[in-house]
Image (cartoon, rainbow, N blue to C red; front, side, top):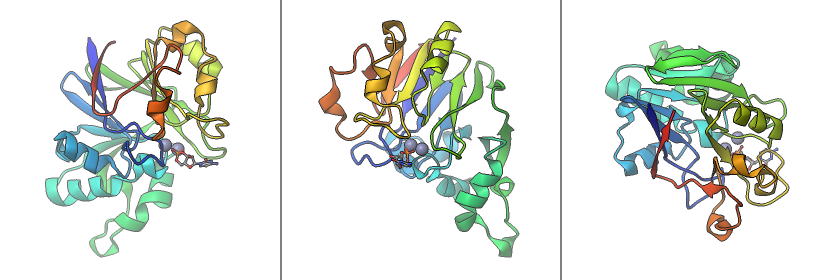
Length: 247
Ligand SMILES: Nc1ccn([C@@H]2O[C@@H]3COP(=O)(O)O[C@H]3[C@H]2O)c(=O)n1
Ligand SMILES: [Zn+2]
Ligand SMILES: [Zn+2]
């Protein structure tokens, strides 16, 4: 069975030539959006993907380059499409996402709209627990070490494709997943060192060749072109290009 991934952006939070690092996952007619940053609505528009073509959205953590487009998504679903889209989020982030990120823009006391559930079909995910979204597509949240004290999750698709979202370098986890049969690592990559909250290129270059060969680098800065040919056996994933993987 195959699965396709199309990054609707591959940029770091402060990139200007690349959109936010968010991904469309296509599996058996189902379309999952992983993260919905503030550039996501524009990127989807450029790709010709209407917001109502998305079957579910999954959130890794509450930085704006990962959730900044959710307010628009919520309003469009409520007032234009008049239905709720499934919102997959860690059970630990559900309240935080509403209280600390979305409530200011979305709460509408006059219409008794007061919670995430008023806009979305919220699916609270437990970490380390594979969840089937559709025949041929399961997601599993793996806690990521990104900002101390703030929850963030990487995503494992079908037990085979690792999508780091935002994380500091975690060599032991990548080795463990490699030995368990993970076939692709989509990993955030800060091009310059030191990396306080992201994996750096220097750190990723310490991975053994068999893991590097499976690694596609994302969440990079505007200076990415200067690093082409300097990434060992890893390659940069390209924004808007569709990649097919066997899973
Ligand atoms: N302790 C921190 C916190 C944040 N940051 C930068 O802010 C960005 C927020 O989005 P991000 O994609 O997680 O990347 C973070 C760092 O660039 C950082 O450099 N150090
Ligand atoms: Zn980010
Ligand atoms: Zn982040």
